[in-house]
Length: 355
Image 1 (cartoon, rainbow, N blue to C red):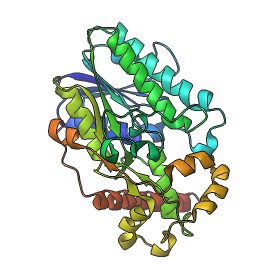
Image 2: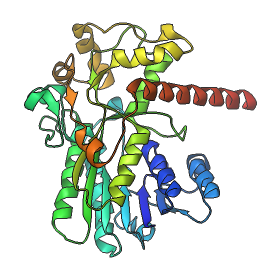
Image 3: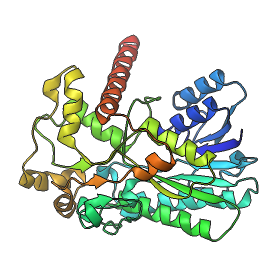
């Protein structure tokens, strides 16, 4: 079994990748921002106890050159999962807040790969956001279907900077890969990631979006937006398979075969939600979405290019070459909600214990 490095070990995806690698007998190094953050590190410490001697933790900072060199020593495979994330209303400067951290983080990790002779394989976590920016882009693709041949051509520093950061980071990874011959690169492009979480402390766009829905923030209705969706367990499986099978090359979209509307997501959860009336039952009028967008960091231009534009996704490559067997999307959303509800109950119990 190989020795692997997983960056972003405390994250939603990173924890699942680590768990699966350990279960398959690999030795794993992982990086966290601070080992002093016991709450954040607890799931990793639990895995250390479950798999004695297999998992080692290191501190590293995406923005510091050579920060990953120590953690990477002796590793044959690097899973670069870590990525900076901000909510739309937290983005004040598209370049400084999104693009620069994503680009520099990828460059710093791959510079360490170039300096570490043992590394033969890199698996990069990208996103479907690197394959398309606005939903309207996909409607221009052959058969109005998203494939690995698609690249985001509509996002920029000023228009959907988060998606643009994913595009820029992935392109930089391919550029650095092409300048050498020692290590090979595979890129995983997952959709909106759902499913049960192994940690209450992870932050991502999918978690934030769905938590708002579960809380009842959207009870008056949701925008008619659709997203490709992937179960976190399938995303982790894709990473590990890509790291183990060196014959695999290129990009892999990991998602169901169509973009799922927000309203349909709510419908998946309604039968098991503690308060079904908290969930939206209809789409908001387009003009209302245009008016509300600026208050949550969403421009009218973005809304007009994404509202009411569902599309298909070609996931055949991930099924054929990665061997993925996609779960029913309804089951993934229900598992996601049940995990979230359990976390809320635990937080409430902790709050009451302190009172």
